[in-house]
Image (cartoon, rainbow, N blue to C red; front, side, top):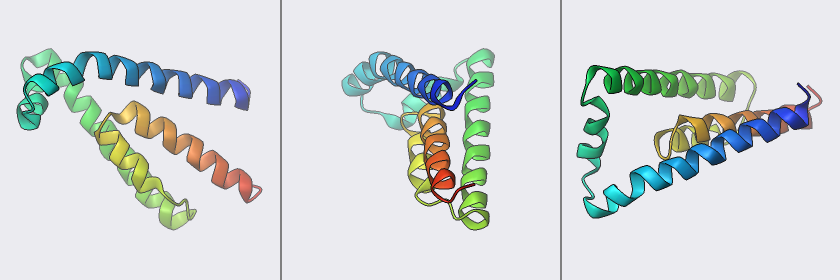
Length: 110
């Protein structure tokens, strides 16, 4: 896969996720702005709990990677991606981090 196709793919996936998130999550959250209840709803049954646990673990791994590369490779502004990994979700934060990382490493000739 070439670099342009890679970038297009991750941008498309993040955008599709963001649209789905917006259509599914925002209306009920506007109707009942209980953020804690909304978070807890991700754990209503064993299947939802499994997926929610996976998402939380992926976010923790992404956050650790961002902190590591901030020090090891001097990748800047990764914290923004970690925040976006919380809301709207890891798909957006991770995609943005990959693009940010690529741009910064390419700018150094790496």
